[in-house]
Structures are given as structure tokens and as C-alpha cells.
Length: 158
Image 1: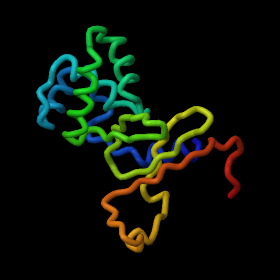
Image 2: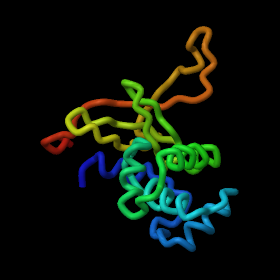
Image 3: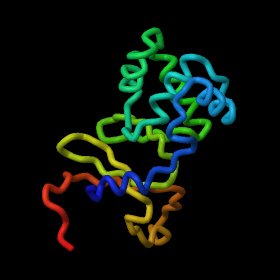
Image 4: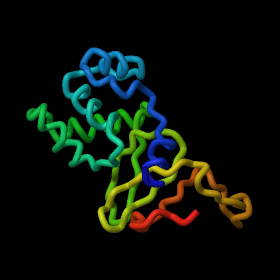
């Protein structure tokens, strides 16, 4: 298992059982979070809350339309916003104005593979950032490190 794969497993903090993909369970999960379930919302949740990827809204739309072709772009965007407001998703703005969804709501960082564009979750404790309180004139409310690079071809030396 690659180091990055271990990071993904360690960073994931899923607020629901991973196997919960059927309509009844997802409907109950959404209701538990104050969301009125509809067929469209359940279809969107089935994908966006169960992926380790960091999809854009358009990628969510394309994926959901495979099984639910009548879902609209507006419904996907509004549902993503609702899931974010209810704490089920985080939204991250990347370089070039690209916005991605992140179902991992636990504190974590990101590694972006420059070759593939893949975004990998990195555990919070894997990165040591110090002295934020010493930044003159700034009151830091939250922060996250975004690293860029490439997956190692050779295993790291011990």
C-alpha cells in the first residue's frame, strides 16, 4: 500500500456507514440531518457522500445522470449547497477557480497529484504547522495545507 493510500484511509471521517447506499437508509440519513429527502437528493447523496474523489458539481451531475438522467444542473448545485450548509460536505476552491466537493468533513489537508490532477486526503496530524499565532495582524480562524507534487515511483527510503 502506498503512503498516499494510507493517508486516505487515516484521514477519512465518514458521518455514515460506508455501505449505506440504498434509498431507505440514505433517506433516513438525510432526514437525520434536517434534509427532506427526494429522489434527486438521494441520488446525489448516493454518489457525492460515498466518493473518495473530490468532484466538481459538473462531475457530480454527470455521475448522477448515469442512473438518474432527469436530474437538473440546478438541482445538483442546490443540493450540494444544502449538503454543505448541513455539514455533510465541504467545498474547496482550487487554482483557476475550480470548486470541488469533499465528503470528508474531518480536519485534513490535501495533496494534488500534478500528473493526474487527483486530490488525495492527507491526515491532519501528518503535517506540522506552527506559530500561526505569530502572524502579525492576522487572526487565523481556520487553515488547511494543500500540497502539490507527484506520486513516488520508488518506495521511500527507510
